[in-house]
Length: 139
Image (cartoon, rainbow, N blue to C red):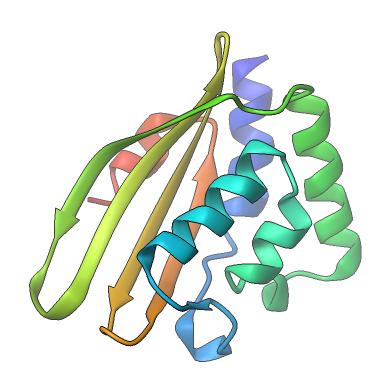
């Protein structure tokens, strides 16, 4: 089952990084970005998540529907917990974070690379996966 989860999420999520050039993943501040991310992931609103963080432009509506359905099937319950596992602060406001979302023994991991520009935060790259190793390797 874990292999299937990793395969399904890796096949779609890892091939759809969000890019700031799309102009969509801009937030008022870090707390705004995290609030949106946490709400959409914990409630498994994957289509909205991908659209808000820019990946929706790289996927068709049917691909978004399929990804959303896959996540709903693999994760039938909303996530109850979230924790920051890794955080690296680079120069000039660039930051990488790896977060874990879980309920019981079910885990989902999210990676976000963002730029805190002072007056706004831009999510440059966003990915999620059920396999921790797939995302921690990005650091």
